Length: 250
Image 1 (cartoon, helix red, strand yellow):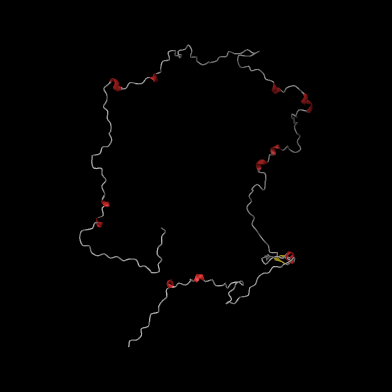
Image 2 (tube, rainbow, N blue to C red):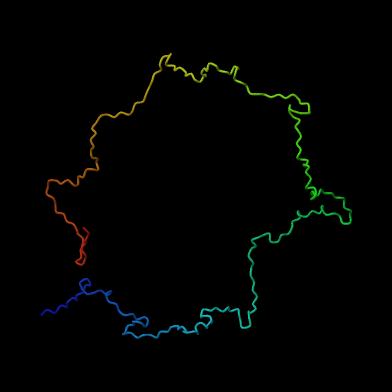
C-alpha cells in the first residue's frame, strides 16, 4: 500500500477571518493604582502629601530645590580670592583732564607786579530810566547822495530810461507779418518734378488656402490591412480576491 503523504498545513489568511481586529479589544491598564488590571500585581506607589490646616501656612521652609552655594560655610564665605575683568568703558570722557591747549599762561599776571588801570562801561543806572532823551542811534541824518538835498549842493544825476515804442522806428502801424510768417515755395512748383518712389507691401502668389495635415498627423500603424491578422496576446495585471472594488461617486 502506498504510504500516507503528510498533508501540507493550511495557513489561515487574516483576510478570511470575520472576527474583530486587535484594536477592538481594550485591556485594563497596568500603570497606576486606579482601574488596574486585576490579573497583574500592583506595585507600591508613593506620593508627596500636603499638610492640611493652619500648619501649612506657618511652614516657611524652602522646598527640595533650594540651592546652597558651596562657597558658603557655617562661618561665612570660605575666603577664596576672586578676580574679574572689568568691561570696556563706554564713555571715554570719564576722566576729563584738560589738554595742554586749554592752559593760557599769558593771561596770568606776574606775581608781585603792579596792575595797569582798567576801565569798563557799566550799565545805565536806575535813575536814568526816566530820561526821555533818545539814544544816539535813534537819529537819522539825511543822505548826501542824490539830487534832493536840503542844505547840500548836489552833483548832476543822470538816469537811463527804457526805449519808447510810440513814435520810434519800432512802432509798427501797418502790423505787417514777420519773415517767419511766409512759407518757402516748394521746388516742384516752378521746376521739373523729381521722380517719386514708394515701397509696396509684400505680395503672395495665389494658391490653395485650405489647411492640410502635416507628416505627424498620419498614423500608418493604425491602418488595418485587408489580410489575415496573426493572434495577439498580452499579460494582464494580477488581482487578489481580497482587493476592495473601486467605488467612485456618481
